[in-house]
Image (cartoon, rainbow, N blue to C red; front, side, top):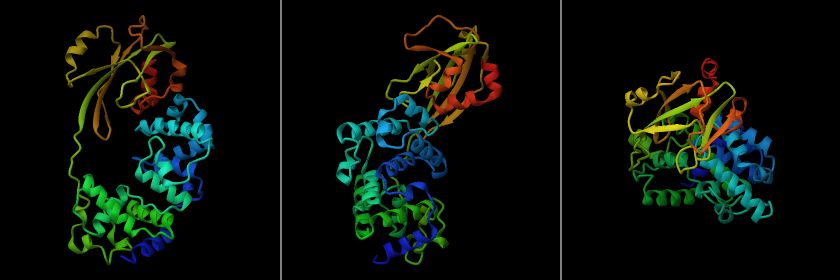
Length: 342
């Protein structure tokens, strides 16, 4: 194992991607990048990182922003709890820490929405603290290199992998080591491994045993839930109604057209009751990590009296000022549908 860190850091210096957050040791910008890149590809997250750095150059700029503004800037990335936690943590830093970003693992870990991995990444990248990162890429790489069949989503597995990562960490260069192991997992030891390109291929046990495709192991299979959403778009050509999602569910604090959720995909009963509907869309499938949203949009070319106290009357021109779920945003982006709707 003595060659592990030197091998991956040498590879990293020669092959790393040039990413803007790697050019700085500003903990605020590193934190932004880490939160944005959770559950997000680098190519997708890049524009969001640049947007947030431009709109909120300092952590207190983010803290002073309205939550709706932050959610608007986050729109399209999904997992909106990340944006809410980001905003809350910025306020923590400005209100409780006088705008000074915490400079060690334990203090960073206290920030809203920051877990073990993110705290280790920030503290090692920005402050050189010897804390090993373990994210999905690291789990995959270590489980293959050592051919470990412990489930990575089990309590025992998480503990064992963290201890192994700690053992491998180079205390003289923790940030470089962490960047290297994550990068190697991200672009070489991918789900479809590119073993010929790997600097560790001569000592990888799973490669020797032909078990690369079986690693890592997970004990739990995520159950996907089907949900059936019917959105009601009322408009008199000037205004429409929106409502805010306040419950603890997907898209919390985002806005949507008035919604009826049904238990199954049967549309007949509802269709019979929509006597005044001008147009109903075909079903649109929107896939999330644990849910499949089957959505239809029903259009009414009139504006009724406010049927629900939670409805908000909004000028059509102002709809985009509200943070919307991506499925609605995409629907409105379609110019042909836009004409049909309003």
